[in-house]
Image (cartoon, rainbow, N blue to C red; front, side, top):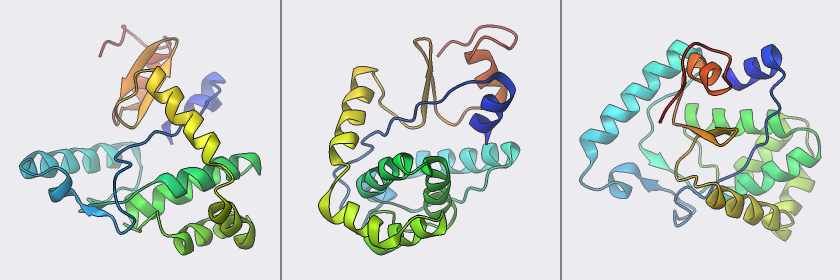
Length: 184
């Protein structure tokens, strides 16, 4: 991943903040054509561009037709961070959602993802049942709002935002290590 490379090459420390992208999405998900009614051609164009950019960056990504509520995945992600498995869990969720098209709001799917990175399935299920990390998620949502985040992904470095699926060169310019300033 580009962010892994930034950490390795420049010692950048990342702070992951979750964001409520379409929190009204029901557990069973929603078709993108329904969510973005009247913008079907824009969705197709955007998806196609994302898949091409991901391929250039060596990231797996498939075109999706549905979106799912990410709240439970975010809760479990906060727990995984506390267990030292945040990055691995985020990768598992990314692959499940953006490659396999799985519903990341379903408890059984999330428990399986937790187990795939070496976390206890029983503990994961309890975290979700008890909503033990909902306050951490709410704090992140508030932080995102206070930073003016309106889309994912958004990367912020020294007050400058990089929004969307960016190339590695754009990240380098964002942190001031590449040629030319970055303006969005």
